[in-house]
Length: 89
Image 1 (cartoon, rainbow, N blue to C red):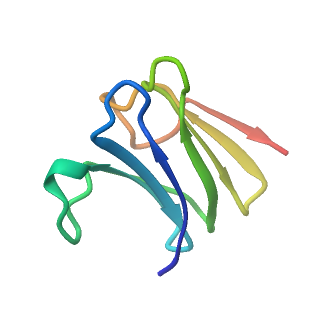
Image 2: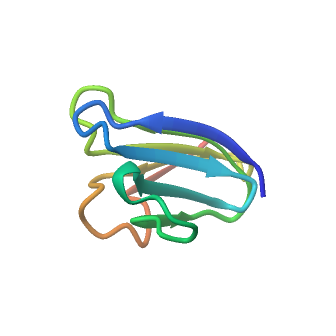
């Protein structure tokens, strides 16, 4: 699996967001890195092209995917089973 993007949380720099061709965006705690030990796995239907924390608060995540959708995940500490918004682009 190939990682195609990384983003560091602006408020909690120990949190790292990764995305890739495994159809997931994943939140990691850099203090506890181990294989398969992500804090959250955000499932997508296809390859995730990019993933970013919100620049001012770091509490939201935006992802872009090869299914032509932009997804907004409202809280990195809440329910991340599905995005709060999807925008077709």
